[in-house]
Image (cartoon, rainbow, N blue to C red; front, side):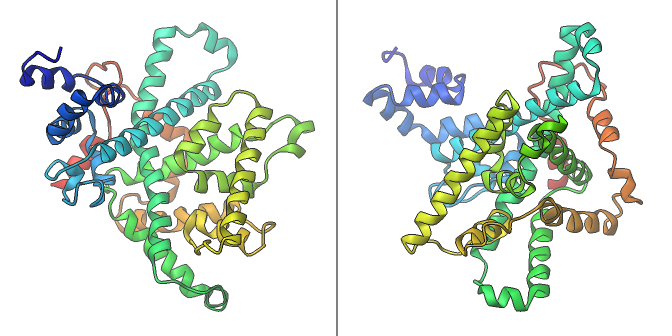
Amino acid sequence: FSALPVEILLQILNHLPLPSLISFRHTCRSFMALTSAHETYLINSYIRTSVPVYLLRLYPGSSGEMGGVGGVGGVGGNPTFKYLLTLHSKQSTSSSLSSALAKQILKEMLPPIERMRLDKEIKRQMIGRLRRRMAPLVLTLGHFFDSYDQSASSSTGTTASAMETDSVSVEQDSTARQKLIMETYPDSLFPHIHQMFALLLRLFYKRMTSRTPLLRRWNLSMDSFARLLVSGGLKEVDRIYRIKGYWRRRWETRRWLKGLEKESRVRRDNGKGERTKGAGGMERERRESGESKVGMGQEDLLALWTPAAEERLLQRGMVEDLEEVGCCGRFVGMLLEEDSEEEGDGDEDEGDDEWEEDEE
């Protein structure tokens, strides 16, 4: 293999999925030297062929990930394998969570008997269509919460007393940050992102609670639900969402929350607990100050997105009435609409067209 010309080796490596390419890179010193010498070529080739446009727009990469050079998606700069792994992780997580959501949507849409009668190929196509169309929307929501936490943490520090006495200005500052982040999302896709937010909350909350009357008293509190969603991120949500069994999901969620509490105590005891604000930061701030019984409920979670999003929808004329984007059933029906062209295996990304139109 090593005796092959470098050009042929690079062509072979270009056809490897990223996990296989990373494994190949760490096989031996000669393979590490080969991939390091042609790192920029391999990564840019992978980005052009396997990374959707919307992902590049959402995560253009920091200077450390880009080897000190900027550029949208790193295609025009010097991207690194670290940056590529970050993109791959976010893309895989959003796709995995979207697939789980699609299966739950199909389960709620059809009665058990109808699901059994449904042809397996048709069911696979429906799940694939939902997953492919929801993945860009789910990833965008994850980007919103990540960006909001980062902007709140890096903003000028505000003391707790100042926050209590000037809650109006804090709320205005929070809304301004939300609007600034939302400006990065194209108008053509924004109504669907807003509808996906409501659908994600509804599906995730139903997944994490029991509908059995005798078991409702054991359901997780709204505070725990919100903490998992905004502090755990899409990766943690996807991991717990896929656990089978209500009690197993509940136990794993409580175990994760205890770990979060322990981490906060250790950080506070060591004097390294810097105040972090934002969606998850507000909750961590409360826990570190000893107010563990007062947390972020669903109302706070809705206020983190909904008011600013609805204001943008009306001001930009995207909708004439908010009821147009208030029905989850209508939104799911739109996602299930068949394409005008024949669908393939479902690996294409539906969000690329909207992001490319926004670039123009």
